[in-house]
Image (cartoon, rainbow, N blue to C red; front, side, top):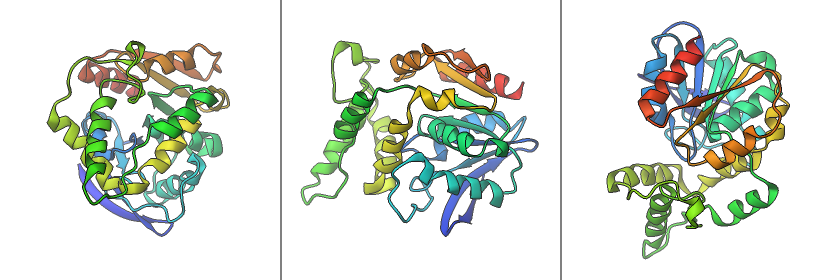
Length: 269
């Protein structure tokens, strides 16, 4: 993929792009970067002009100057990014944080996009959100003895076996396979690149994980229900609510490549 940088509202946004045709923007999860969606993007690029930005504050994109308190703090940056890259009414795909940003954008600017595709959207109660806000995020402020790095390592490791990572109840365990140190290291690196403000958009995404947001959507929307998602319990809860007729649900298989192929087929029509 070709990598580019463009200035949007005074900050530099790094993005990857490949393919020709109708545009589709892929929005990644926190605290990752667009790199996590490269393989999926390459598969889509057979059919589309694929654009994968590093969201503000992640990867090689600069942070928004002010603190991010809600998804709507980032929506104007996405709108100006779409304008600056000359993308006309693109599809939006988002996973986790990216899905919540896609929802927030579609609610504010429905006329600016064609369709949205939501991967790993969920519904959390207010009490669940408050507990997550209190306990989920590790402090990355540097400490003289480096203990913050060990805390981060353990957080990432446990996040690959439990959701939420701090609660090891049997019902919260989605994997009993010890993650590879190389996989842990890769995700730890994403946290460190994002830095001490990594949690701002991450928190905002959890706060936005409400079925009411999806019920308000008026654009054509597809929800991908991934059988291996760490959020499956909360995705199923979301899907237990009545959703508008413009929202459809597609179940995708556990295997990542099978899942990608399923999603490409749906998006390409």
